Amino acid sequence: MRAITRAALAASVASLGLTAAMPALADVKVGVALGLTGQIAAIGEQSRRGVEAAIKAFNDKGGLNGEQITLQVEDDACDPKQGVAVANKLVSSGVVAVLGHMCTGPTIAASSVYAEEGIPMISASATGPELTERGLDTVFRATGRDDQQGSVAGAMIAERFGDKKVAVVHDKQAYGRGLAEEAKKAMIAAGKQPTMEGSITPGEQDFSALVSRLKQDGIEVVYFGGYYNDLGQIVRQARQQGLNATFVGGDGLSSSEFWAITGDAGEGTLFTFTPDASQNPTAQEAVEAFKADGKGDPDNFAYYFYAAAQVLTQAMTAAGSSDPEAVLGALRNGSFETVVGTMDFDDKGDLKAPQFVFYGWQGGSAKPAGF
Image (cartoon, rainbow, N blue to C red):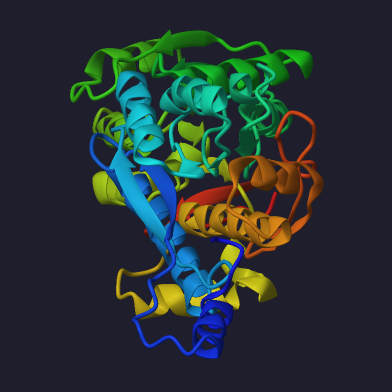
């Protein structure tokens, strides 16, 4: 039935002289799995915003063969165990594809569930390299990897802060730990040895012991692997205790909630992220959609999940079907035009041409750092 458009079915009914009401075609159910509660819920809401805007745009243009895509949105709270539970729930409900998950840990855990069922999964934010290193042919990543992002940061620190004492700190989670390890590798490869290494427990409120240690060791630059909520507290407390080190992190610092936590103390904090998608000519439809939804300026997570949804709908259109196997074939072999540029995938499911640039927090906004 899914290969027949509503218009074609209506014409067939009319030609047969039937007067009975035409049954509606079944909608195409797609799962959305994000961290909508917990420490970094703000990123989850931006990601959801991007998916919903892209799918609305697709449905408004006729959908897939006359069928509409419906979204089943689930919250894994960025927890691996909940990620598996969400994956099983989505599979049981009959989704044909999944957009997400968001955080590296639950994405890796959930991806095995989808692989067993042959269901395509596209994440636009899970950057841990392990995700695409296990030979699963159902996994796709619409962003770069931590070994690329961390390498960019580590090389920059070695070049620009070569004469400074540097600390590497992470939050012990898959994303943060992996990012910090890659940054450290790149620093050492460039001849820069970190002066200090440490870790925190996510969600702590008192980081005075860490700040005291940073001060005692004379640290001038801190690379942090983790998210905006924890580093926001660290930066604010560091300034209160007189530590004026430069803080550097990854894309987990891009949320406006970082500045809400730090205020002016966050000035000058640097982070790596994908190039600003809002300036792309191909993004203007999304820009207008985000203006219309009344939720304020979106961040790049909104644009990249918008792009992930575009990749999925374009793959479905190319396949002429929502059948998972057909969609997987289109994903592996296609090239997709999105709000962030052209996306195509290598044999592992990674982007062939990912990009990372530096941003700095200035006056409450994240602005391109120019290097």
